[in-house]
Length: 300
Image (cartoon, rainbow, N blue to C red; front, side, top):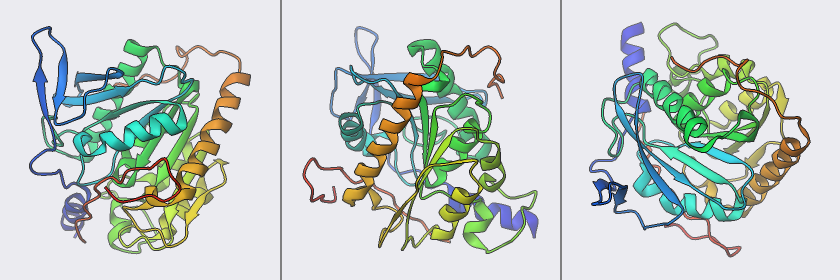
């Protein structure tokens, strides 16, 4: 029963777009670019080696006036090619840098999508942020949407000086999406219900009340278990893949970012050396939806 249930949960978790929405191309000057993604002078492309032996694609969207950086782990059935317009909008509206990546087996990233590969993936991305951009934990907010809540809480539970966490349509665990179980089994995946207890920074939870894939109760429970609760956003009538189309989404997220900026400014500088080392149902096609500058938002 355990193996069967675990396999079912794994099948729920991973639906890489086929074909990918972009290609990786190396220019004559050695730069790596994404073909199929609008060119942007303030966007860097990285090919990162992971502990799992895979090469993953990551993009860094730079905002010249940003104080904070958002490390965004996207949802299911999407990749960086489909997400780039949303990243451009969030970068502008929130005045943040955005680092995102494709999990192993997604987009142009090599390997197979598994729970532990997503952990290795986000660790490689975090190490890149530290090495290439000098991003401090205090100035980093990790953002996980749906399946992306798994690697997000994996990282957040290990970084003791992290700036903040955003959980968007997040899951309590893989099995709990499929069955209303009351305990955590060893064969479960993405045990967010356990990891949230080890997060030591403000947590914003965003969830739709009409989520047809991950019940609203998942978001409510994660918020209840968070040590440092930020005012949650329960999107009335929101479903699993359309929360960005609601005006309150960007307003509430901007409010959270501004609050985290104030905390970051007032906190004394801290060294990272004392923190732990990071070495270690049904297909929902979550095509990302553009956040418009006007009050009325349309689907892309």
